[in-house]
Length: 69
Image (cartoon, rainbow, N blue to C red; front, side, top):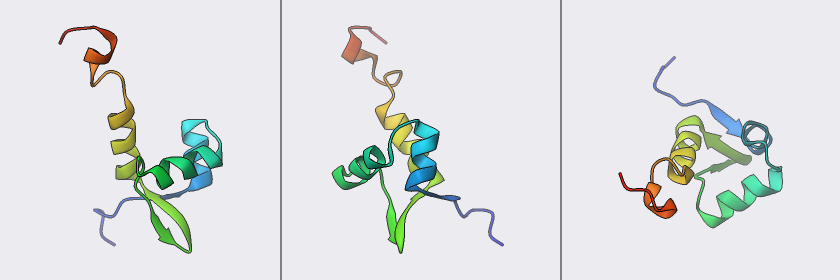
């Protein structure tokens, strides 16, 4: 087994991790904010979930809040 393969999550699993509804996760996918693959049902790679969290984090871009780096 290749250890480089990401774990795949369902919409329900991601919703539970993010503490949002499944519909919210579906909206993130449909808007292109969260990458996913349709393999019967939507599947989200663990690395794509991490990238989504990094991209939406306010710690990365403090300019939004008037703070200087």
